[in-house]
Amino acid sequence: MTDAETVVAYDDSMPSPGETETATFALGCFWGPDATFGAMEGVVRTRVGYAGGSTPDPTYHDIGDHSEAVQAEYDPAVVPFADLVERAVEEHSVRHQPRKRQYQHVLFYADGAQRRTIEDRLDALAVDEVRTRVERLSSFTNAEDYHQKYSLRSKRAVLNAFEAAGYDDADVRDSPAAAKLNARAAGKDVTAREAPWNRPVESRPDGR
Image (cartoon, rainbow, N blue to C red; front, side):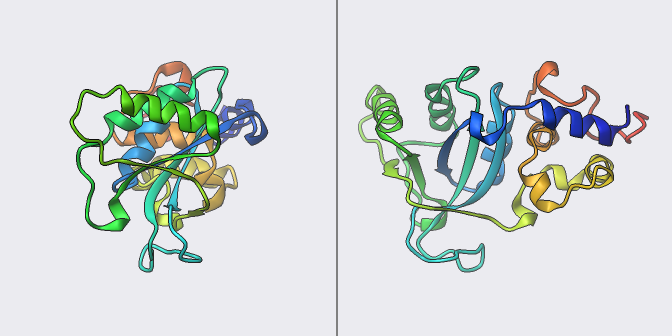
């Protein structure tokens, strides 16, 4: 099986968007969290974008009152929302709130159950003051293609497999295989059974 065929087969084996739930967190620069959540068992897809504000059609150079955020689509039969909240708490300092809105810390919720899970975790922290905000997610705008799977984009040999499979930038953004390989490219630990292939992402497509 070629690498392109492996990518397609892996993606086809993953739960569809209708079978997953979504967590959204703003934790500073979104490149790192994209890889962190992509490495988690049970996380199927990741994407980065802009959330939390009211400015229409935000972009990286005109972000308005939004913050950089990551979305993680996950299989609730494999990983509970509480585990993603725990990882989000570990990924940033809850005591610190950056002054620049672009990099502020916000844990978003989609419904009452997510809100209770987030608030219960923050309430349990042994800190004097939690400055991370908890807000309902009102909108999420995908970031530009060059921000999606940022670490993976430097691995030309791996990207060739996606191109050979006929993937465009939107396909790579939403690819479960790309989420796992991006995590590996960033140096994250991805279990063998969670990854499309086990060799280092620096390897050439023929494994050499």
